[in-house]
Length: 305
Image 1 (cartoon, rainbow, N blue to C red):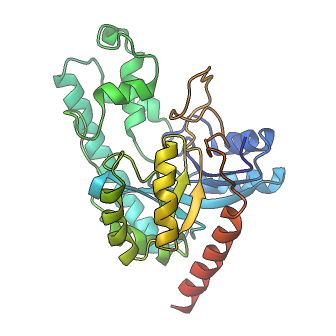
Image 2: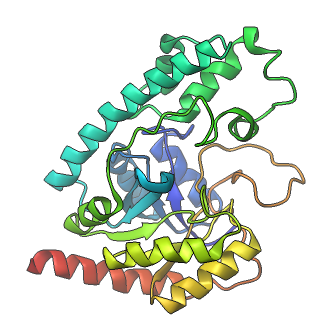
């Protein structure tokens, strides 16, 4: 396991483990610093921070904001979860996600899948937002879909076959643009980091990634997620060069959603536990100190504004 993990999802969004359980898992895995970064909600932060104080784990309040352009996700690390503009934006995002999810269910029904909106609500439970994995879980649990699910054993495999961003079933929920998302994170005293940058539109295309990155830098982007479970060694090499060229903070995280047994399956794949992601022999020593400097700087800028 790696000693820290700066991207974790809980049951507040589409993770399968409650915030406290995620903190307990980090403790058991020897992970001492984590960031809770649920999709478009801060609903799991209070529980995680309280558990962290009890168990001696540092919990950085965070979020993963869904963005319209390129299906981009932006991490906000060290945010003030009480920030009014951020909370207002999240209320709107939750409503947009619900509307999009309802349409995606209709799309799957039209495509011959058996799934009902009530199935999705059951999967979402107490989640503050409804996400694609809730829909996938609902579909995979219906025995009527057995024929269409032939050869599919995991959610990741379902996504690859049926639920890509360019496929017929997906409806993009986000209305927020990159400039606004970065400004929201900064307003909330957070550090804005581009999460898993090579997904989905820049796989194997470092030059195009750099073009978009230049735009994000002009909006004030603070960092890049350098290590994650879906990043190949080639991706990491590209991101290292970009980070150095534009003087960006580097982060790393498992993008953890659900514990499972991966067997011998190599990277890239979804992380099976908190603190698990490939580093390809590279050191993580400079990541937390640099992030700490950025957190202090962003907090100071926000207070001075």
